[in-house]
Length: 126
Image (cartoon, rainbow, N blue to C red; front, side, top):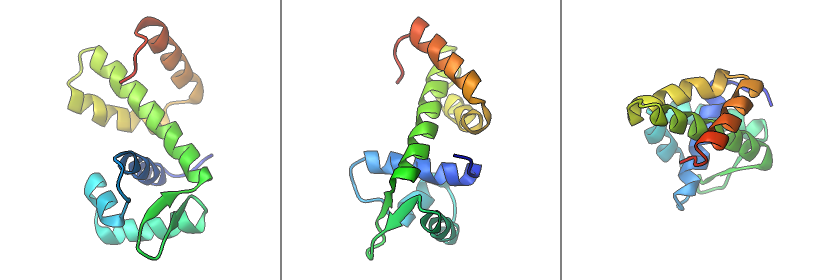
């Protein structure tokens, strides 16, 4: 499950946008990530070619199983890390930004221990 950080960001954004209940389109992804539409188009092409997403003729983006697995993995890391940082007193916006940095580089072992500690001592992930 080794892919680039930027691809993980795109997959996570697609997941988060899909949780809002409406169809996910490239413009929504561009807005959420603060990138240009051509950048999103290029990323969607690569993700589609690698079997992470599907796009219909209307431009609606859907995660395929392989993409959903990665997106859920990254999103869980983001939620746990940002919640933990906020509980430690970090400003929520800073906590979200720092979680974005940490979620990609933290080893599975370290993340699992953080999550275990968090759940044992705090018991609620926001």
